[in-house]
Length: 190
Image 1 (cartoon, rainbow, N blue to C red):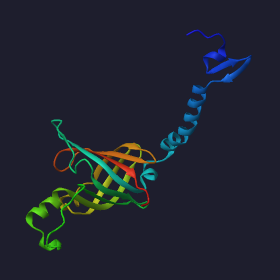
Image 2 (spheres, one colour; image 1 turned 90 degrees about the vertical axis):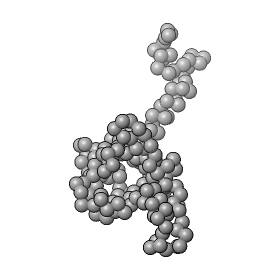
Image 3 (cartoon, rainbow, N blue to C red; image 1 turned 60 degrees about the horizontal axis):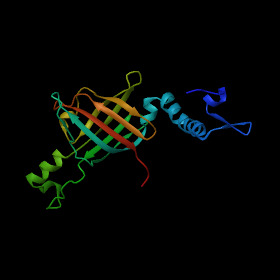
């Protein structure tokens, strides 16, 4: 590319002896100006401050040591995770469809209904701490529908994405020996 004038190389053009800014240059400038606040938010907001609030469950992908991948709650899961400013959290995750219990009584679920609910959903709550330098959340589980999680060493979640609208983290080792990659979107009022 040959530049007849320096202005031609930096997004300026000439029209009847007047230097004008060309449209692509303006578009790039406007886009950069609009994205700058988001980029600045991501750089200056701490993990602790960034995760506070309610998040809607988008997806989770499991991966075993041999590379096998799956979607434990299916392609369209449901759920939420809530982080409070004082260090508490609550999580619920499930497949899009859980069975309605025929007896309309949790104490009288059929073995098949109970197995499906246990296999296709989980809920737990407790406290959390944040390691800002490592971008990790440590969850101490106080109560759970899967009681094997309670009282154990805090579970690590490694943050892979944190923006104003998206939270993604990896659970590097579940009790079943797989890694989970979970994506959340900032919950909006209904």
